[in-house]
Image 1 (cartoon, rainbow, N blue to C red):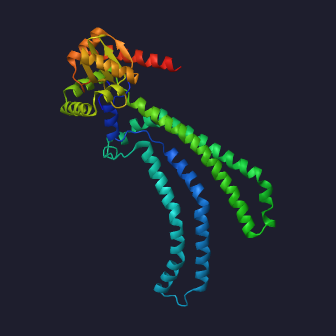
Image 2 (cartoon, rainbow, N blue to C red):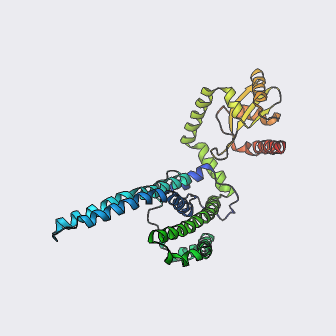
Image 3 (cartoon, rainbow, N blue to C red):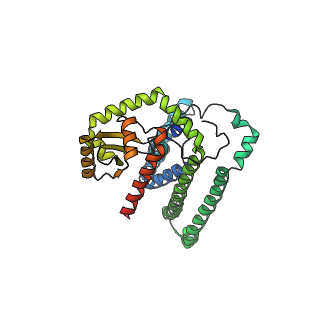
Length: 355
């Protein structure tokens, strides 16, 4: 990533910056969320899995007592052991499969598919004691320590609350049959695990939010970094190829659909009309998705009215956009401010109307 040059990072990360960070393995992910959902998933699946597992254990025990080998040979002991252990292990496999599936699913839902060699490559900063000392007292480390303390205290409190509420049942275990005692203990443990799982999930949601905030803060850019990146992208062959592809895509889907998806129509107000679209998550700058003069400008305004797309008269800006941009082009850097003001006005107006 580019150096910060001593400037304050006040700008949101551009899509390119986020893509580069993603390739390096810098993504927002909460292991707490994964662990909490896996725990709750296993708790939900536990009755069915353990019912089958209990049946297999009883059958294996009966088989074991009924087929004890008469000799101490290696083959006999191995066959006996496999005959007892394998059915139990197979019955336990759904439990492992559920945990594995949930773990992979939650991780994929958080970050998608990320395969980063750079994150696993050796780096001197990872063994630098000064860098390690800084990481030890960083906001992330403090948050991890506070989170571990809070989580442990909360889990102990929840477990204590369940045991205290069922203390009478625990004292009465000696009066119950073995199966009855096991059922009571299982019920108490299930209640403890359920409460811990729900509390863990709540903490995990907060942790995931914190991780996203930390990554966003880490990826913030200075104004010079944003300008430098825009200059690089304006001259890169990849951007030119992407712009040509966008033009072909816009041409195929038609002007009506392009205007329907636009955020604003900037007009002359009668001679020129330029449709602008901007998605801060996928675009590094606003894009011209349609433009026209005279009759075509009238047609654009009509389509915008049918689709309820805001129309903002700004003659100087409309003329400049029409002359400097083709359909599919991103707005030039020297016009960012003017277009940004129009978009901000539109977003504010629409928000006030909705309220």
